[in-house]
Image (cartoon, rainbow, N blue to C red; front, top):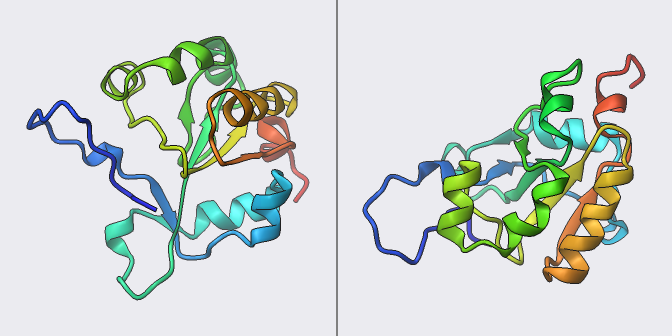
Length: 160
């Protein structure tokens, strides 16, 4: 799985921001297959994440993108982005993933995930992220999309 995605336009821009998050602790296969991740599992993934060049080449790495699909207003509200998360509001999902790689990067500030990348989606309560999970897998062909059903509300609650 590639950790660095470059555009095909051969420009000489610095695209270090295209490096996906990496965790030294890969997700168990049953989580990937179930399409769901718990708060504890996600917290562990985030807290063990780093940029790929900080891990030794001998360490197995799990590369992922954590994608918040809430509205701009919700993100600015009482539940900010989760650590390491990127943001694409649900109303922009189709236009975002239909865009060419360089257009996507210009619009959202990070590289468009590739088909084999692990994408973890969340929203405020888990309903819209489940819809996005379905859209990304069924309509855009992404192979590994996981829904954090607890979502932002659960993440910022006092419960473990």
